[in-house]
Length: 85
Image (cartoon, rainbow, N blue to C red; front, side, top):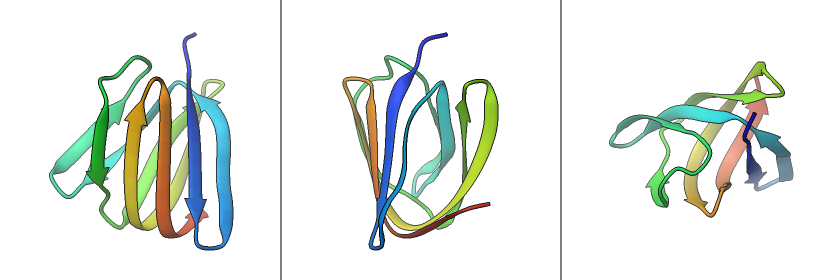
């Protein structure tokens, strides 16, 4: 299965660094899902729970105050706070 790089950094340091099949949640504009080879995007994230699929296992994470950037199969998220749910 095709994957992309996911990196989530908070004010306390790196929270996640892994390869994933998908990432979904909410921006200030509405819901979204990122899959491999998605077009480039920069967005402000809502303070909510997000889900991602790693090796076929669905995982959840709570992020607050985040910005995401997806380009060249790399999703980078910078958030004020975050924690696994």
